[in-house]
Image (cartoon, rainbow, N blue to C red; front, side, top):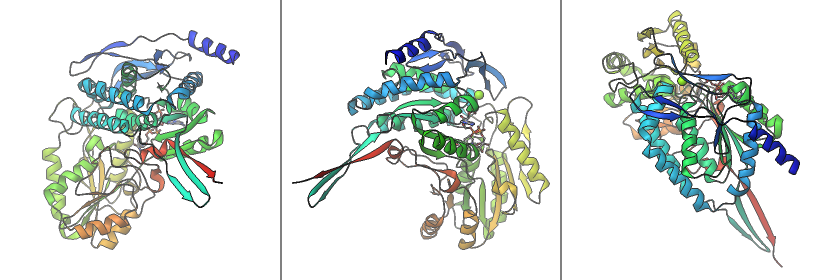
Length: 508
Ligand code: NAP
Ligand code: MG
């Protein structure tokens, strides 16, 4: 034991404490941006070869700052801290945990404008959208505070026996998140883990580390004990991999691509059979029946595919339109997009769609558009990048798209949508379910009976009726099929972070 303490000391003292840098968001907020690894309530520089992560503003392609990039020894240090913290945090008074989560929500609320601005600067999403994300983060953290003292078990009475169950935390949880909703994804991971008595080591995406580190400074301010929350930017290949393979991490929560999700499962199993939840990609259908309210439907189609520039795992990227209104819908959708949807500077409140978050994704989307142009699919609108600086892409719609077209089958993760015609309910259900993904789905109709009939038959974790990409902190979200498993938000999220102990007592 004293030997182990020696190692911990060595790793602590070899580290330099990292000082924040003074930054200014494009809309004028001056703030201190931490750039180190958050371990044990302190920001440290990594002990790697000196490489760091270049943080770019995708609207301007300019460098914002550099942040530390963690490697396996940093992950070891963070896990050690989280394991130590788990011993007391896991048995702490639930109302104490609730108080700290409520403190954190209030501190985020007090800083919500600067936080939304950091998100727009780092991710490229519009300030309005980022502000909505921060609102949901605050609500969600508050709602998890309410669960802290309600982790009840069951009692099961049988002749000669009394049985009861306890819901207990898992230990140190490793969490890996993507760049499309940097703070929201972080809150969906961290808040339920803490409410249920776990400690965490979280890796944000290299493309969007700023708010995760700013959040870390607020964790400290909220009064969380050392080691309960650890946040380490770093590459998937180094930091992510070290988290997946770590023998003391007991659970992995991952949001990202299906390809990496499979790798997450393999490594989690091979290392020490970690419990895994995955929230992966999608290719979600949005179905338009001829009795829909057309004006509202246009909004729901736009929210479905152009919100967050289409970089939402549940994007309604396959639109199916009933033949009787097909031509009318095409004409109105084209006019609506070209007249109403402004694209550009995320800090300009006239703009609905900001920048694509990174160069790789920008190029992927443009390459899919070129693929589409070479097929039989017809271009209704868009199809080009906008400007020469910043990753901006026109909202792009292909129609008369055959269900076998690559554009209609693969996740593009950008403002690109396909439209396909259908005639009957049975036909559209079959087309909608003809995918390996199953995350979201939309139904636009005024006929309640048809809406519920279709909703029951769709193979997806969420069905939106007369709305789309519409999230609530108390409504569970997650996938069917290769979109993953486990549910985030709502009471369901607590299952991801607890295990059940059964106690069976034989009576005399
Ligand atoms: P990704 O590679 O799956 O990245 C998601 C997260 O996993 C990031 O934090 C990433 O780290 C990390 N990661 C990558 N490789 C890893 C590994 N071998 N071990 C452990 N962690 C690893 O996703 P992406 O490359 O950013 O985007 C590719 C595609 O994924 C998109 O085009 C889209 O289709 C899909 N996607 C889905 C979601 C969603 O919400 N479900 C979100 C984003 C992307 P670094 O990036 O820091 O290296
Ligand atoms: Mg960035």
